[in-house]
Image 1 (cartoon, rainbow, N blue to C red):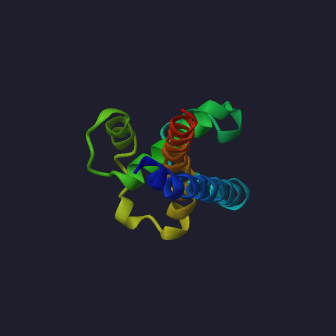
Image 2 (image 1 turned 120 degrees about the horizontal axis):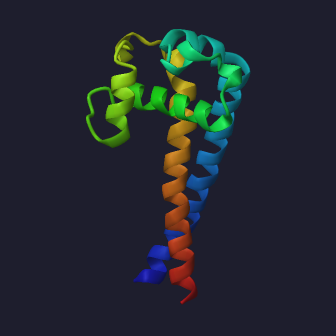
Length: 131
């Protein structure tokens, strides 16, 4: 039974992992090369009122982009860090934000999170198959 499941699940999880990687790379490329300035101008994170984007380290830049993603994807949630992002970006109405701004953020972080879950499943299947 498990061999039959692993026969289909291993290639599927690997394919999903590769697809998530490619989605993340393309979305990050489009975001950082073409849409970063307009995204920051549209969503106006409060951190950017204190310092310009270029002065922040990579970890803070990633946190700002994660806040954008969480606000656009889960606007009514009050759970954990999503609540914090919704409070910081309360001035942003997700329905008013253009898809031109949304898709690179959703592709970047959605690809990361789904790819992370796919990688965990892939490693679990590999380890179980080896035993």
